[in-house]
Length: 436
Image (cartoon, rainbow, N blue to C red; front, side, top):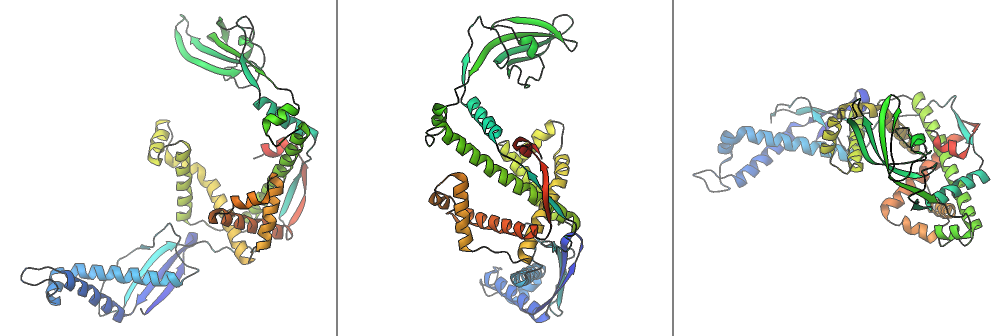
């Protein structure tokens, strides 16, 4: 097919493509469609496949032209996009034709479509970028805190005796009632469970429940409200000793408490390393996005927001349509939620595009030897056998993710050489993960 193309850049990474198709190809396309009609048409007085073309054109002229126009446009776009690399449409948006052209076999066919393309971003400005690396020390406190958490997870919960009182750290189950001036129930909640002194009591009645026994009912005033509470159950946690037995209960790979401590320390160090790397890369990308502004294609943002909405529906174990009904019933709207998400989604997309652009600009690649080294690193960090790691990444999709992640980490290491990396504030392990 003989055709010419003209690409015009529009706002927000959109493109207008104008295509001119030679009149000979227009005529050939029309003749081809007429031939298909002749072959399949059934008109009274003619045998199938023997209806004269001029009869068909008189009867189905508009339909033939419409089919010919559709076919030649589709064929030309497929031919263009198979060869085009820079101006291919995004996969989740079809090109839109503003005006349907007139189909005339005696003239060249000219038509235009608009569509979004992947943003062209050239990162030029890296001046003044400073990435601060948090300073974190892992010591006995962090290990002890994790041991206490393990101790809590392995605690045995038991009912207290009927004559024993509720006290701090006990788990209580109560019926909660708010009373009106005449003693009538104005609000009620049965089977409410909380831990005394843990800060998880939404009603703030820890002190009032403390000292009560199972089956006790008590009325009191709290924050100008008259409240009645009945205790249904009181449970206590029996914490196991932090010793070799606890270590063996956690996993059969641990023989002693020292084995468990060594594993905890390694896991904390790995988690710290990964979190610091995440904080550094986020800081770097945020500054690159700020210094190298560009617009996100509307269709790309819409697809991202739709993906987030569908993911939320999956989390609620419902359909996107049912989720919208649930949100509306709660007094919100889908549109308002998508608007709230827009800012974060734009930042995330821009960061992703920056990374993709830099990977291509710097021609970042990884060798089989580098992937082998990555397998070894993952095995050492996770306390696993390297063959176990390789098995985990044996399917093509997982292997591709590992390669892409390795490329990205390699890119960051190159970029850190071009910007200022300095020591950040000293923070505790807990505060490191508490920071957003």
